[in-house]
Image 1 (tube, one colour):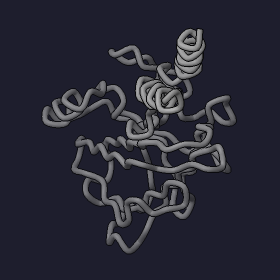
Image 2: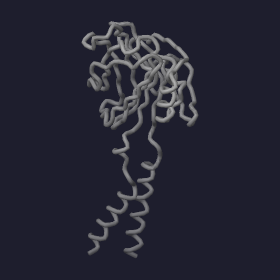
Image 3: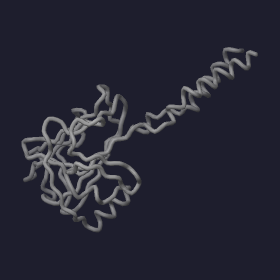
Length: 215
C-alpha cells in the first residue's frame, strides 16, 4: 500500500513536470514590413512595423523602412548556412540619427538568446551604432558589413525580470562611421537552452528523496 502511495506521488509529479516539455514561446520579426512572413522552416516572422501587438512591437517612434533585393553569393550562402531565408536580409527598419530604433518583445520573465540580423545595402562598412539589450550595450561601436553583405550576431543569456525584453539601436559617432542611422533586418528571441528543465531529472531526484524517507 505504501509503495502504491509513493508511485502515485511520483506519477503526479511527472504530470506537473510535463508542461516543461512544451516549447516555450519564441519571437521573430523581419524589418521594414507590416505583413508577417512564414519562412522555409515554417517559422513565423512578424512584420516589424507593427506597434503594441500581443507579442510586442516598436515603441516610442515608428521606424523608417527601406529595401533592396540584392545579396552577394557569399551573403546568400552565409544566410542559408545559418538557417535563415535570404528574404530576411533585403528590407530594414531604421531610424534617422539622432533618433534610435526601439523595440520591445513581451517575453515574460526568463533568460533568452537574442539574434540580430542585418543586410547592408546603402552604407557599406560606414554605418555605426550601438546595440542595447535590456539597457546593456552588448555591441558597442558596431559597424555594418560591406555592400549587399549580411551580419548575424547572437547575444546569449539575456535576463528579463520585468516581463518585456527591450532593444535599442542608437547611432554612435565614436564608431568613426559617416552614417549613424541604426537599423536591423530581423530580430529573433528564443528562450535560452541552458534554462530548460529536464522533467526526468525532477522525477528522478524526487524518487530518490522518497526512497530516502522510507529508509
